[in-house]
Length: 360
View 1 (tube, rainbow, N blue to C red):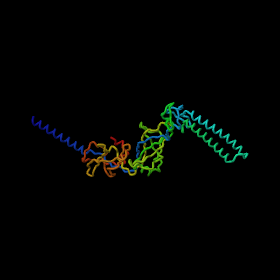
View 2 (cartoon, rainbow, N blue to C red):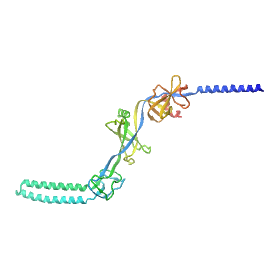
View 3 (cartoon, one colour):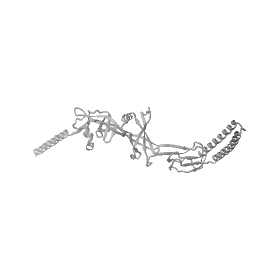
View 4 (cartoon, rainbow, N blue to C red):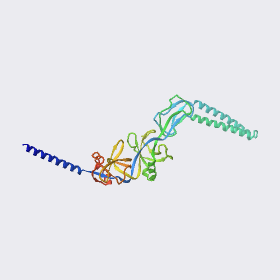
């Protein structure tokens, strides 16, 4: 009986040992996919924080002192060029105009009498010239009075949209007091700051028409329906930030964009000799990006890399890798530092064309 038990135990040990050997062989036969960075010319879409401005945005101020007698518009209303918006009490200026006109009429009568006498050689030509000067002065004062009276009416200088009122009906306003603001939103100017490197890439390829077109990602993460065109670049870089300001013009036929909004400009920029790798070949430790590099002996070692740009499923590597390095493509969580692995090398162009196939 004891011999039988010993024989069974021996067989069991042999079976376990055999299973372990098969398991080790299986682990040894596990192969990982390895690839290299691809060096190529490409384009990348970068986003820049932007400020949205109306193509015209002005302050409407009182040109004369007086009581605000009438308001003909409402806040947020669309107005047309020349439309009457505010009326300042004009009584004083109407009286001044009447006084100036009366004075001009009186001086004109004097001038006619003097001219009649001068024609008869009763008075000298110098006296006639003096009378003419008085008449010209009186007419000029009428014109000035008319202008002051006209200043009591505040009209829209262009088609636009009213902002909120800074004064109310009956308010006493002084010359220069702010009444409201007016915005022309038919087109929008969108300002954004571009770092020096991206600026140089843009200017190098600025002759390509498609590079001048940009998109606007609005605050609700929706792309604005109409593309914009980069039309202006400021003269100087900001020495503190190393950026230079761009201005893109966007059509706004539906009036969706308003002055003061924010968003992100999406700008496509060319990259020469860019080094690109699949995003899935990286892992993150304390906000830093790493890859596993396979050395000549088949051992893997982690290496920190710097990301220069990001595209769907792809990173553009700024530093940390060369095109000849071999990097682990999959199974990053199954390996350990300095572990020797068996792998199959996959050409980088094949990997990048089949990212969805290799996606975990």
